[in-house]
Length: 314
Image (cartoon, rainbow, N blue to C red):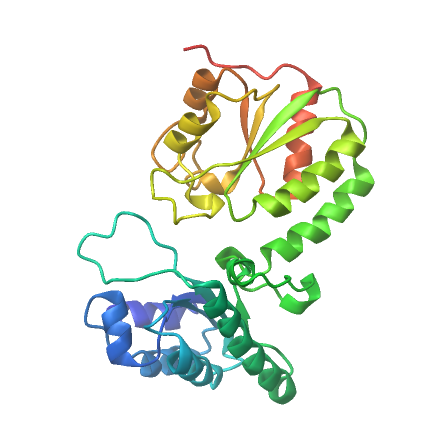
């Protein structure tokens, strides 16, 4: 969707790094996946990298479309640009119920996720042997779907694809260990931690350990996505209506901590435009948005413990 003047500005101003959704290097397949005619992708990537622009690419893998041999092809052809294309993330397709007039897609099965991981591991080893870096990484969600243990943080090298959900759990676990060494008992009885269903087991493990050290009962509450549909399991797509519907009957304690990835950028609004103050009003307890990390959770608990947090009355 870039015009010629856009490319010229990117190159002239060296707007780098850029993150590009590729999905497939086969141009006909890419057009089918995107639902529109697209220009050939490899010449555009070559033009940008030749001009000194660093790129990070993403493939959303859709079973029956761009997996299998097509995934191998895309990884191989994008890898030829390494290190100008510095990293490639492979993430699983996530489907909402709002799919009118869109192609028939489905989620990866556990077996398919395992196969995708195997493919990626083969390419990683090849890149390590020839280039000294892994280049291509699977999103945490693929490991969870495959039932495979997430690697340690060092595996993810420079964490270039963190915002695509690559290495987030490994980073969370490392910070978890740091927080547990620092936390002291807090003057709180019970606090609710909200998360998506995918991340709930990881957060619950941290909450159990943090509760022992802090003396605070921590209720980890995975919230299903009624707004987007139940197949969407990531925390960043939770909405205010989901929270109101699923938290209203719970004993929430002295406050609710939400990960800030649920909010619109720079605003105190959830994705469906529900304000945090309105959420606090309807739930009857303080609702705080905190950094989506162990340190953010500790900061939120300490804020609640320091004194009363205002609850806006309806």
